[in-house]
Image (tube, rainbow, N blue to C red; front, side):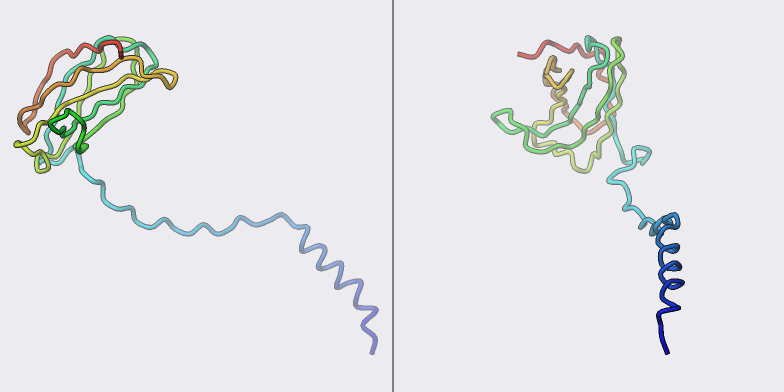
Length: 145
């Protein structure tokens, strides 16, 4: 028995199956995400609020609540947030967990303003004395050295 007469139809079937549109690969379902590190709506959370003055439009602002050492160098990040300036007074709300706030250590609110990848302004360090909700009012940004 010769396989030669079957060779052409088998090759055509294989060629037709390879030329069909590729099927989308099956996407596995996403694993359940881990719970967030903190929930700002949690009753345990505290917040610092206020407004920043002097940032140019389009600049990125990062505020950080830091534990600092005796040399005024950051030791630990307690909380941070990033904002985008619209060129006018910019309100902020920085949530933090009071359980990690060490009252025996110096804690400061610091900020920096970056535009086009360059540090252009900063917020002078502001000491935060206790882990309570605080309104800091209007905070003036100053040119970076």
